[in-house]
Length: 351
Image 1 (tube, rainbow, N blue to C red):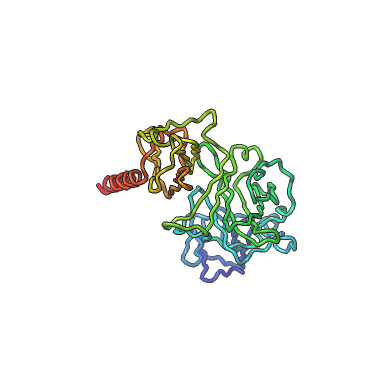
Image 2 (image 1 turned 90 degrees about the horizontal axis):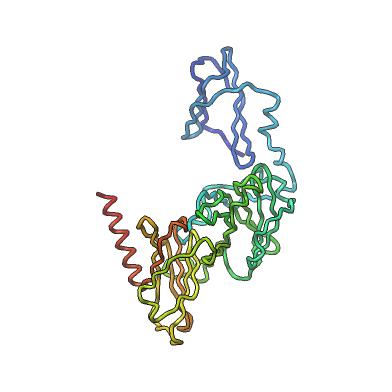
């Protein structure tokens, strides 16, 4: 029920014309507005300006009407009773990965319309997608290619109060396939619908599924608690990060380290069988080959019964093969160094 109030049209170089009708339809996620223009003067190839509300579209061209146009513009899916309705929830379109926080709203901008969902999504094509076999609580309900995009429906059956998103990410660069997603309640758990800009199986092969977990039941220092699961580990033969322990190897042992294009996890064990001091926490700086340091959007350090230390940090996507070294520091030192770098970069920018 889109209204075109305040809409006007101008044709360059044509003084006499009329607009007899206008039409709006939504097809595959795009709003298509058509105008029927008549004039005793030649219209073909003329440039048109259209004003809709406060927006002006320029340099449009008139095309001669043909019998094929109605079939292209009319969505035959609009009256399909099998379509999934979602007219209340909002959906979001993402072009790059950004770790969410309480300062970034979960749903923004895009209102769902039922005609945006091809009916084909209801019938899986039985693709050989090894997406969610090792992801606890996630069920791949539907996956199919339709209209040049990959459609996926995932059920979250975990008992934890978590928000889970599934990205298709290039494990080398951190780039994701642009995607639209929205939530919809389902009988066996919350369902999330995804539409990825991946046209076929051959292009799907460059991506790995990255699952992002969020839960608001643990909320501290203004940040969400976050876990990540990306099928890319530091033990990969092509990637072995250099770790500079800065002398801390006298008291702790580096037990595990995982580095992905968007997050890092490090675990330390106490040395010589001793317990770790209750007020002792470690962190890490990631230095790149060009001498720059990775800025952490959020991070946390924790310990369990003084038996081990854990450190997580999340950052904008990086190329992990451009990492020079990972430098272990005390929690306070790492925070101080990062603030100093941010301050110096700000001064340089102002200058």
